[in-house]
Amino acid sequence: MRRLAAVVIGCMLLAVPAAAADPALTLYGAGSLRGAMLRITEAYRQSGGAEVTVSFGPSGTMREKIEAGDKVDIFTSADTGHPQRLNQEGLGRPLVVFARNRLCAIAAPRVGLTADNVLDRALDPAVRLGTSTPKSDPSGDYTWAMFRKAEAIRPGAFAALDGKALQLVGAPDSARKLGLPEDANAAAWLIEHDKADMFLGYCTSGKAAQAERPDLVVVPLPKELAVGAAYGLTVLKDAPPEAYRLALFILSPAGQAILAESGFDTPTTP
Image 1 (cartoon, rainbow, N blue to C red):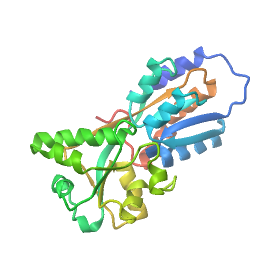
Image 2: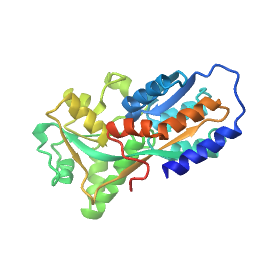
Image 3: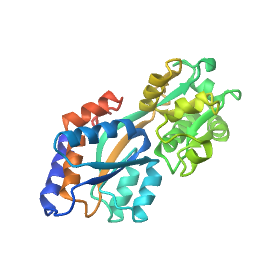
Image 4: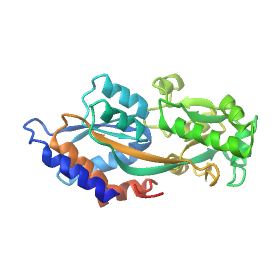
């Protein structure tokens, strides 16, 4: 799949006329890609590529900024829906899946979280359950998909989880309201500042949170609750050829190695 995606992008690159303008690029990306994409764009620059200005946030919010007229060359989303929508609106080229992620539960030690009691802990009225915001952020959408899976296992679970979930991040103004620093790991920060006892988010975020706070417990969701996340990118309409070269670099062994080191799975992972 990665090879096919590279071929598609390569064909689009051949069809784009050479640009005479400044080759510096602008990339908008999902917040969960911050660490990996900063490393990728720096590696790209060091390999002879253009300078890349990056901005991160909830994928839905970043898409809306592009729709509102922000000049962006490449968009890397935590799902396929947002880049696909830009393509359908004539604002972006065909989407390419470039990485995959999964949901994990991240908790303070006091929660007593284990691989066997994720649903019990999430449902416990005494456990404050933090999540992202559906529609604005794919992480929230994936979390509510997990709630629906929980309903199939334990009738009544969806209503309980939907009712208690604290949508703390992922909305356009979430960080401002909480005082969450732009470069902070949301799960680690929320637990450290006593905003939540347990957080449902990406496993990559859990890995980064545990690197900051080794006492945090990070558990992948069990098979019956597991939800996968496909990350898609699109090169925006009228982007220079250099944007396609950056897309190819993201799909290259060098770009994929950086994503893997950050905990992402390959595009071909089931």
